[in-house]
Image 1 (cartoon, helix red, strand yellow):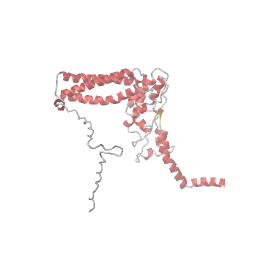
Image 2 (cartoon, rainbow, N blue to C red):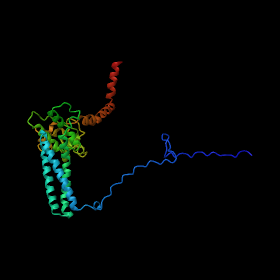
Image 3 (cartoon, one colour):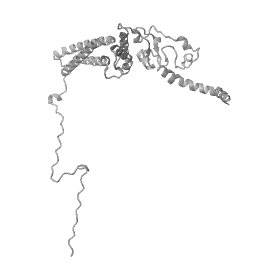
Image 4 (cartoon, rainbow, N blue to C red):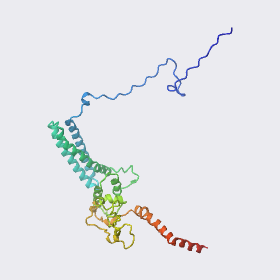
Length: 323
């Protein structure tokens, strides 16, 4: 008989979840490193778990009113040093007074330990409305008070007057971003023109959307999204009035005879700016001509010249000259 057969046992495959090719497996019997305990969220006390009473909510709102009053007052004082920001400065002062009045009314109920929710509802509604009205003027005031000259490559080595001029030129961007109302922009421009130095209003320029919103034309329903598509004339897109069709480009078109470059009842807030006139509103040629009417006129001219043979005749004559 030969020696007894022995079978070699293969090592158990390692767990890929605990070891990796770059990390050697720990020796047998080596205790694993303890993971740090997870941070548990702080448990609320029984008092904190209870819903706030109307009195507690009122106290919180009083604190917010005082904070807003302080913000408006401080910004109003800062804007007083900017020549063209008088309108915004006055607006901030008015907001500070409104927040203070609301605080006094609410605090009177708090002092009386009034815990009736119905008594606070009118003040809460007033605070919400006031807060919404305050957001945009406050953002505009902050933008004008802190132009970030050092961080803005548009204003390197500029004087204060030059920076002010550049900021006025960028007011359209502030309006588009919702940081400045159209009336606020016009008021700033008016103060800027009349600040005592030698300045004059030259022109107002913008695309058709800017014209519609900056000059309140949307209130008259005479802008590019309406049937009566122009506030300078009575041209219309309504097919029921072909005599006033905007597509009639002849020199005898009726809408040409009723152009109104000036309007005594102009609703535009820019009328308060010295030198502004309706006829000084420059149109955006890129959208009106190059991306607008010319896209229709040029193909129409090519098709018409092909149909009557004038285009072929034009090129045939040139070909004959070359030959």
